Length: 97
Image (tube, rainbow, N blue to C red; front, top):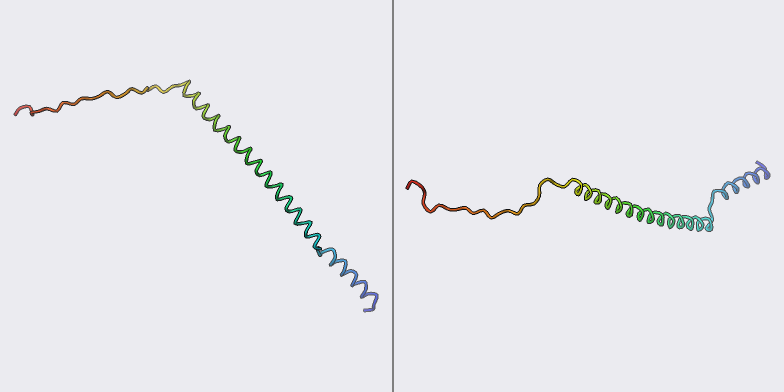
């Protein structure tokens, strides 16, 4: 192998290595991008959680409203009647003795 071929191979190896290696700046940029994405994702999840809580509360209130509306439209046929005092008399003597 002559000197020219060695230079060509060395340049090819340098180009290959430079394309695949990351510098400290590349790593710092990547960390910053990941942090930004994490912050955005966390904000979106909090917004979605708030929306879900509001929708769930609305569904619960609607269900309770429907329940009370049905109870008002079709009341129960049995009404509460307070129990009357029941008096039991205890016989003092058994009959026939």
